[in-house]
Length: 461
Image 1 (cartoon, rainbow, N blue to C red):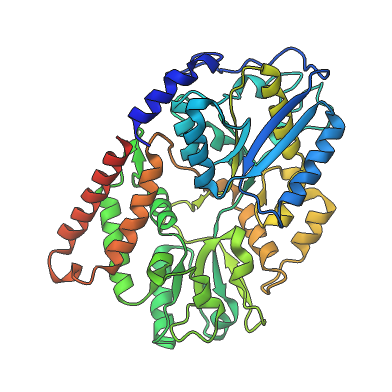
Image 2 (cartoon, helix red, strand yellow):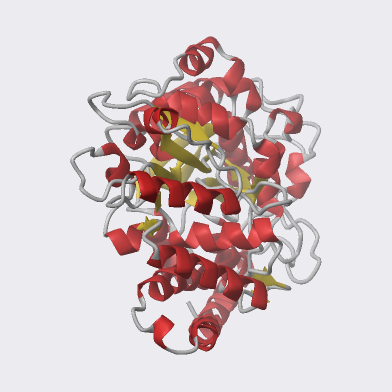
């Protein structure tokens, strides 16, 4: 969406703004002193939950919440995937026909913020009555210290430094590997990228037809490399990934790709876990980097081998980094402050330990409330951790929860979503260029980077 389109929406929505949200703004929602329980309020929630897997859990949570607040009715709707939720909200901004609450990624919220339709939460979070741990909430709401702080802090990754989202469910990436193969061949699980290439070389010697490593997300690969090596991805709310460090890394990855050491989702044409779990594949993989939320797909269905799980490689001598993914919740402005407060109360209920545990167990995502992991059902789940189909999700969860200090989120601004798309395409394009080694490889890679930056600038407007 171009900035000129957003500008048109700004004029249409200005009447809804409770306070200006430009520059280093003050919170634009001031929590009411009281919640009017006699007022019948209906709030709308747009999400991506499947009807068979998670919507029954949502219906159960809404019913429980309604017992605490009978005057609040929550209507929810699955609006396709994450991008469809974003696109529908953007389409409806001019008519104010957007929900009170929606699933979101940070890039989406940057667009909503530009249109001044979001609620900043800083005032209400600290409110003694209705904020986190507030005295007048009818259920035991979460306190700020109950959250995994890296997930909580994601809500502040915006240009004005205010809080616009609350976490709901999260995931990260992990290195899944064929534990039996590693043991049989005395291989050590790599912890750095230098070690990774050494292990890939050894695997190639053992199985020349193999593609030792699969990586499911080209975008995550590029962005996490920038984070762990300390190179710019975005900088000062602009696109900063065209730098010597990232060009050099792509050259190294291209050299190792040409040796047959790894592939990725776009290049392979499907999720690369298939290369590891399907033992009938000729060009088998013995490692795969993928989402912890998809851990169930990283184990062989028939138990042909045991799957191990480890943190993904990092730069030698640098701190490990792990991307924070998964849905957050964004609140939208309403002419009725009581409706905003009702929505905020519902968000807090979704973040209570019991609700978090149910959703995490039902989805494979990580709970954002630490107390959810202390509940008996979740403890039983963690105790089931194993390298087989039944236990792989719990094993991946244990690895993910152990690396909270490593989580990161990238800088968010209008157009930052384009950078994610472009660097993902950059990886697959450079890897698949059969002519790149026939000339000046540095010059060709530089041209690809320049084109990607130009595409970002054009799309951002």
